[in-house]
Image (cartoon, rainbow, N blue to C red):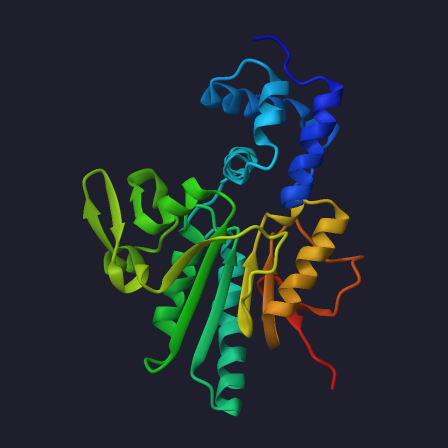
Amino acid sequence: MGEILDSEYFEKFRKLIYDASGIHFSENNRTILESRLRERLRSSGLDKISDYYQKIQNNQEEIKSLLDSVTTNLTRFFRNTAHFQTFENFVIPKLLERKKETRSSEFKLWSAGCSTGEEPYSLAMVLKEQLPANFDLQIVASDISLKSLMVGQEGYYAENRINGIPEHYLNKYFDRKGNGYQIKDEIKNLVKFDYHNLKNDSGLRDLDVVFCRNVLIYFDETAQKSSVDRFWQTMSDYSYLFIGHSESLFGMKTNFEFVKTDWACVYRKMVKR
């Protein structure tokens, strides 16, 4: 099979993917899109890109499969140590002070773009250790990749995937199983995995923390702004937003306050009364 993606269909698929998800394919990423479309053609038993384009029209399940194939699911436990240091040493103490003032014992977190679950499980282990025992902890983990969500829900990771987990956590919250590790139910049950497209409202509200790292880089400025505005709507007053270390809200008109800690930078939702 030679080149399958001419300029006409590159534009058609680029628009379709953008309209469905906000993911932006530039000319530089054309070969990546073509390789993913080859995979979908093989899976669909089709030879022509035009036939696949006709198939995908108004076929939500196939659109989900295409979006699944074009996303990059690179992740690991406790990825970016500086973010976790900020979370443990700055964000959690600040939020606990606030909870004490408001007499609240709820803690709600969203891991958006959670991939195969390493991030929300890492956060769950930290919160399990640091929150008072009487707290109601709610963690939602969402992604656009159904395959990744299934891995996260299973909570089983091969030996080469557990690099980065502090030994204390590994011994306490994982069971050795075959050639890998199974996360224990006391952590697994804290995380609710859910399919979600960031182009839409999640329906979540009053969140204390949102992690959405290394996702916005796949969006253009318009889609980035829309996603950040939707995060704002989901978050409670004085809550915190973590984005990737190579991502920034600089130059974007938002109401988030930039906070520089001793470890890393984070954004805070400050509400002016």
